[in-house]
Length: 281
Image (cartoon, rainbow, N blue to C red; front, side):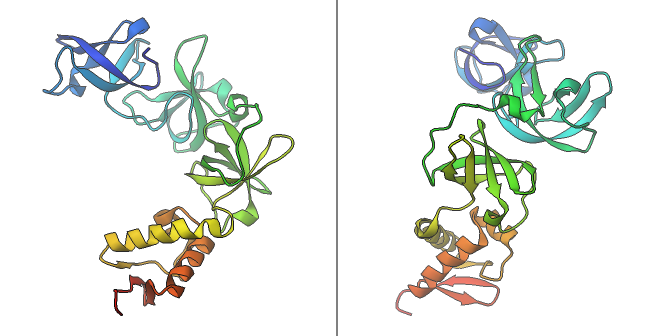
């Protein structure tokens, strides 16, 4: 069944002057405007599209990919404001996404970036955003195991560290001691479950526990070096931000993996970076 606010693969029913009409099941025939069509598209073929509502609240298809789907959390920029309705967020589509006034915890103005949950409003049937994150989180105790990899969206900074949305469903906490450099609100990354508390709250870390992180990270460093002529412009002196951007890991974990490779004589530290050690040298 075709779903509003989600990617869908739909069959082309017919061609018309405005574009192609697609079979969207219970939603009926949905228009894919001509500007999104290609010469390869023909009636009877299937096409990957995203479904949302146009300015007249009619379902419409697009081949563009939004930054976030219904049911997910993301950080979006406010690009417009109406004091009677709310603000409008850019989410990668032609029509901006409404963040209603009632769904704002703090006032949001053009230029601001805000973490929101995207959902279909039951009353209006429209796709909207909400910055009241807690009401959209799953309150069921999660069934994670220690050191499990999870997707994180950094939601806010607190005196203890950072709260994060875990797998678009739960709330977790990254203690300040687990973070080697400041994180940006809305930043997305892979994290790991440190433990589940008795009250169901999730404690997180940014790297695997102990040396379980070293071997796979060392292999990734070797793969990176091999793909870049045996050299990279990162070493022990590189910034935590540069290391995080390249390997999605902390500087501490990077140094441990690099140290293991150096002890095994697989790499050598050179000025401004690291190089692979050639066989026989």
